Amino acid sequence: MKNLDNYGIVINPLTTEKAVKLMETENKLLFRVHLKSKKPEIKKAVEELFKVKVVKVSTFHTPRGEKRAYVKLSNENPAIDIATQLGLM
View 1 (cartoon, rainbow, N blue to C red):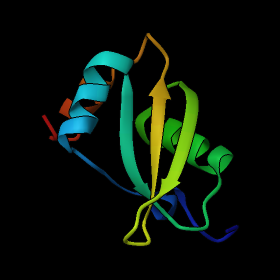
View 2: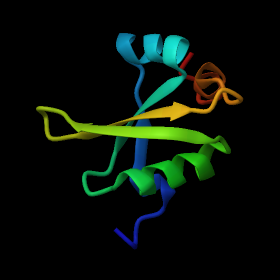
View 3: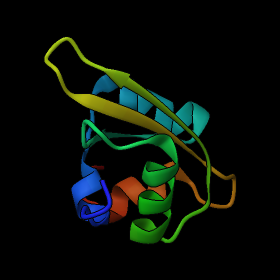
């Protein structure tokens, strides 16, 4: 994992109905991430890419074999603002 940059760790943001609801209610963003990435690496990559403070990272594997991460942002960084910057909203 040492040779991956931030863009290799965080592949792309996801906007599902559930992800949009989490943005609004819990200040979380959902990303598809590299299969072998670990939570501290995901946290560091998101903080560097989007210039935000990450409070917590939760990961899970989908039945399709993808790895996804729920990233909870601190209250001073609204998830909706980041989604708007990315053109997701």
